[in-house]
Amino acid sequence: MQTTTRRIALTAVGIALFVALSVCLQVPVFENYYLCLGYAVMAVYCYSFGTLMGTVAGTLGVVLYSLVINGLRGMPGWTMGNIVIGLVLGAAFRATREMKNIPLRTVLQIAAILLGTALGILGIKSLTESLLYAQPFIVRVGKNFTAFVADAVMLVVSLPLCVMLHKSARKLFPDLIQ
Image 1 (cartoon, one colour):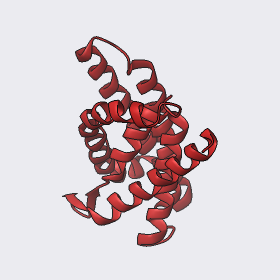
Image 2: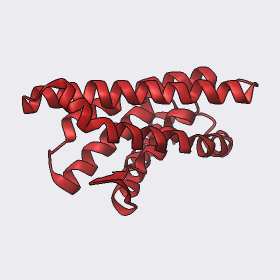
Image 3: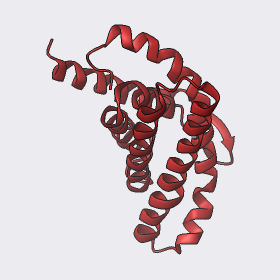
């Protein structure tokens, strides 16, 4: 199979996994908010397969999840936020993935997760929702703070999974590793 076809198929699997984990395994953390376990898929894809595949899996995963669960409610801001998160994580993971100093690598990756999630959820998602719902930006930031915390925690917890699965991904998909 051609590399492009394999890349598209693997991305589709990532989107499906994002949706399945987000829908089937809802872990409550805050009032009316659940951990989005699909972020583990996005993190693994950004880590092993690069910025584009990770961002597409996370972004289209959110679109499909939103359509299945609650229609368009919340989707535009979350989708735009996931684009930013995917871009930041993909770039940071690619730059740090091969570092030999594991504690430094981990600190830099956690910093990228916090920065990317803050920009994506507190910044872009809040701004998008502020414009859509005609609410003050600071109000939207307050409403999205719990989402930021839960999403950042999920991504940080996913880091060991990223490292562990990367070794297998290199063996199974050597032509798709970025």
